[in-house]
Image (cartoon, rainbow, N blue to C red; front, side, top):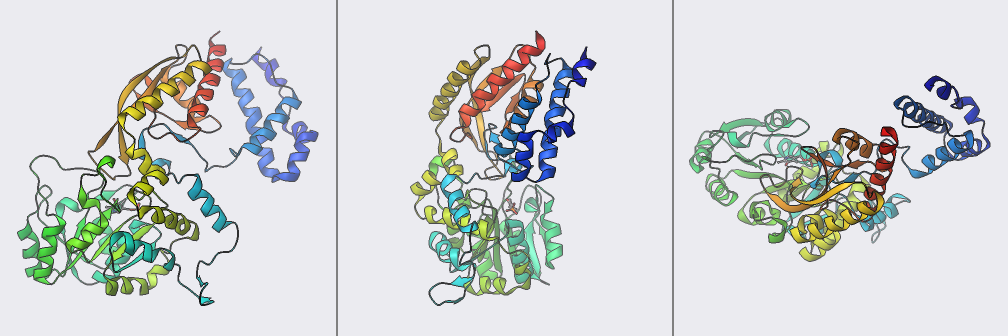
Length: 470
Ligand SMILES: *Cc1c(COP(=O)(O)O)cnc(C)c1O
């Protein structure tokens, strides 16, 4: 019975000759249209084989579906997804979401020419760093600033410029590997700096640093242990104390802050003031570097702030050219920095910060709203609102969790794996959280319109899933 149905699926050549599809070929590249047609017929084939459907759509219906798909944007490999995991800076999902206004600003800069390296006042060549340097100095109190492609690049550039051929003391407790095989010892070796390991994994004392200086270390490097936390019998030396040692021993003090933050903010769970770039500089760090797309909530970038003489040397390093920031990221970064001048403005205008600042009660309110929408779209769905622990993610605030709320979903005729897969295959893919036998939609990380999309998707999945079982 399946075979006769399979034979009824229109052939690719016939579909490509369909007038509606021929019209689409004038708008989209032929290969993309052909691929979309094939994907559509493949999906019908799979549905027949799984027993989910008992009839084949007509060539007209398939042609319409192909055109809808071409127009919807899901022909791209890299595209928008809905993050229902409750992890705000999800490394696999693109870290910080930018928000509409920031994206519009970037689009405006990108869709034409820009003054990227052109000084509009003088009418001559300008510097790409000029667009954010003053702002960064303003928000961090630094003497000078620059930005590169990402923080891994910033750390490398800082070490290569300031530490080549020099002994650099780093606590064994901070010789970390950040996701994507960024390992501090290897980056140091590549940069030409000579690593001097001090202390132990769980304990490093102030005397370890001063002893290192006595043994020839000219630089003290502190690395924020972003993605883990050593609990129990442990000790590290904070930036204030390090600054005293560095001053006394005339050593340079560098700090890879990783998920640096621009202002202290209690309601963001940011009790650890060591995250605040400006504070580290005031404490006496010579250079501090951090990511643009972690707690700053903007684009991928590596921010370097600190002493003017040192930043100038970094700017002159030829490697800067290889690590330079792209104009789109720069536009996004400038947007975030303009709002970061005022903490409340930042929280209101930078989605990642806004999400981190949501109270547990607000998450519950949103979860109730989502549950209601799901009940309307899929009355058969079994749902409840549950408390969850959300995370900042991106290795930014290890060990800190945020009281959140999620809608837990069960569909009697589909198991968790099947629901999770169907959600991923949605036109706008939905990445949910799986806990035991439930699919959870954490509300903290949902953006405007996401709730409606989730409810509609569950409606479709419930409907299709029920058809299979009947
Ligand atoms: C995240 C992180 C990096 C890498 O930053 P990217 O912007 O991802 O390149 C380096 N160091 C620390 C401590 C980090 O947390």
